Image (cartoon, rainbow, N blue to C red):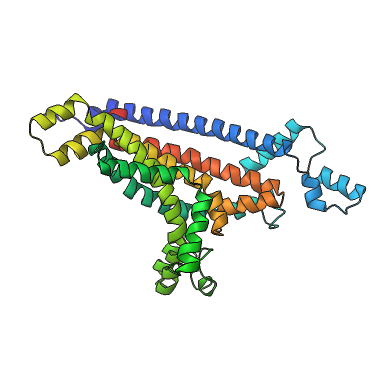
Length: 354
């Protein structure tokens, strides 16, 4: 009896799968390289046209003309712009984003130190927004035109319209200053800053892993207010988009046919209608998360949250261009990888894309 060997029978399929994987990986690498090149070019040119003299920031306004010119040559600013860009691009390729005037450290280590705080806040806010926004959007679509639908739309409109920094200041005034329900600005209380060993960069998770329950409660109390503010804003966007997507699906013929056949309403809503929009909903959640990474600047400033948004804000006020450009590049790289992660999720939830 002849038996097909695993390699013999599946060889063409395996080769085809490997070829597709290699093609997709190469395409992603090329796309990533071109995107990062464009990102570095744009941020570099913007830094060169803003009315800030990095030499003056470095040497101070009391430096002699000789010291000024010496610092200018040392920083490579006496070279043509294209040569400056090529030099900077070469530094970025090897992970050198320059030195921050504000902190005196290299920008990459500064941004990597601040990024976990932003990621922690954005993850918590996105979780709140998705958990509340998706059911609210589905509920509003199912009860379209009724009072509950109008209520969801009004709540979403308020969250979508009000400035996030104003919401943050009001929340601090009410829940911290007046009621005292939560801790104030910052990521963790001063008393716990040195009691939590840094393992993951997420203070709350590190406190839980270390069994420091008092520190964990303190970190959670600091996190909950800014996370709820950003979560409310993201919930408003997710709910509005989910409602629109679901309304379109609920009017399709296959939904009407399923209802006519007596299929339970929950099955029609969640399995049939929501199953067809889940990829779009993932896109909305992913874009919301990316927005929170790059748009949490005002919230981090209001709550003195030591993330990359606050780092860039302080760098702007200090005229620290290396820090501003470096922080922008790190956020841009994160955005690129988030889009790639969304593509992978599409393949999981929608086999037709594979």
